[in-house]
Image (cartoon, rainbow, N blue to C red; front, side):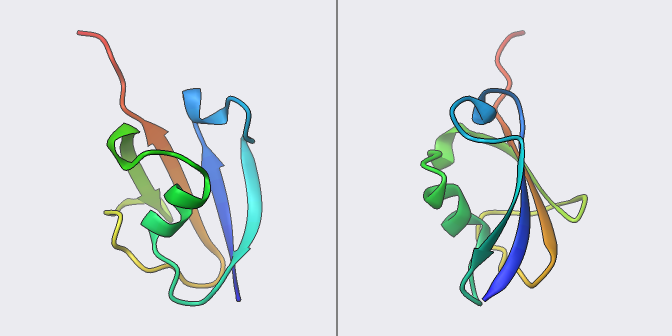
Length: 75
């Protein structure tokens, strides 16, 4: 098992949490966490892993910090 700090922003916090340390199996990807949180991939705007942009296929390791931001509307 690995521990990952998950930070949610804006509308993703509604009914969830702001920040939480969660345990996942080894070989967990960013997409696995997004699905675990019942967030649709189409709603994801920015993914930062340890303050670096990543994609959904990125595999996580112990003590990673994942920040998930929704798409921003407007114009």
